[in-house]
Length: 560
Image (cartoon, rainbow, N blue to C red; front, side, top):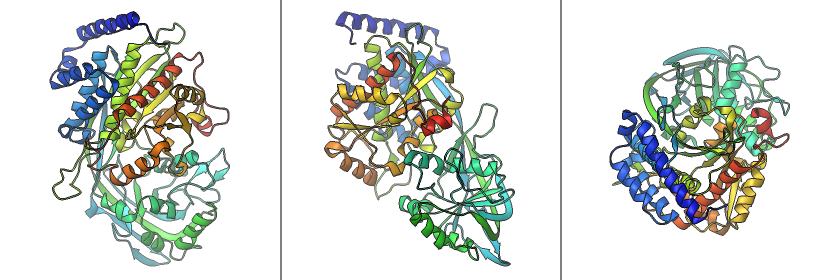
């Protein structure tokens, strides 16, 4: 319930005292990080009169050209991290990183050496060569500097093993010491989010390693080519991949034993399946027309894969601030609000005269601004029963890396984290009337989200594009993988939202045009921030801890 004016005044005074106390306890190095022009920018936001004005000011600062696209590991990102830390401090949150506000994440950038790429095969006694960037794209192992593997090849359908559903593409084949070849995607009979989980390359690689494979090759399906053409894939061949590094120096990878990997074009796959029991074209037709009913078999090919990569190391920080709960029985439990702070940085201009800066105004300066506004709302109201952790994460655009690092090395005990509410790319360009609550139907978070939305006259709508598996594609999924029920709110398709989404994805997603010139509706932004606050507040004050629904796929797979 909202405080009276007097109680709110005491609350703000207490926050100010807490801030002074924290400042007195902060190390000299931490104070230095919070010095400089960020303080003036944050102070200006604090003087704004409305939620919409504050969100506008935060987005303007974070998406300014001076931040150079906030790519993880760059000075532009570091400046944005200091800005968020300054906000947390000014609101009176407690530092909740490993060193003050920050949790440093060690990152490894991996860039392929195209000149060293090699793929060939001995098929039915005949040597067959494959052209790099035409027939295949060589992989980028995060832990090994080079690889050289020659082994028999085996086709394994999608490369999926689902014990719960009784599906096993490795049934009847021996993959030990072989290079496995698998279609992109997952069985069409799986529901959308289960399919998205098993379609993950990292999940497939882990499964291949568990079956003793020496290498992994992905081949395109009709659906995967519709999502990303070969021309689009190789246009990013020079772009680096990224992984994170454990404190003991190990590089995080799903399959450490598999270093030799490649991705084939349709032309390359056709070459590889020459002389096989079924041609690539026949298999692809079956994959498209028979609901994924594929039979695995040995290929009459011995494949050679060689490659080399260049590694570079970088550091980038998650930023964490804590509001402690007050209920004696619940205060040690934590609700985490996340928003990724990074974007994709600076790339070659897409048009003559362009600057190439990918400002990421909606993706995800807007989400961070809303998280900061939600934090302000918590500080204005009565203290929650459970504690709230506000977490701005790095390297989401590189594969949810900052969230993954935090999930592995949380700054609060992982078994005390009861739920995650995630903010990512809210396209607030219109007065929304409905929202999609990805993941809400999988746990007891669903009724809470519906209740919060109903209080604001907002409807909950079903997933309009289940085939895209959105639930697995943002930072909340790293919490799901640790068994934490999570919800990701996205603006619905009512009142023109479908056109806004389609236009943004076609014209502005991961492009320099996602900048401050786009027509944001900051009143809608304030309303969406309020909705996320209300959902988090209901979770924080609920008498029972959130739990997965009986029989839910993710609850069964990851639930604690």
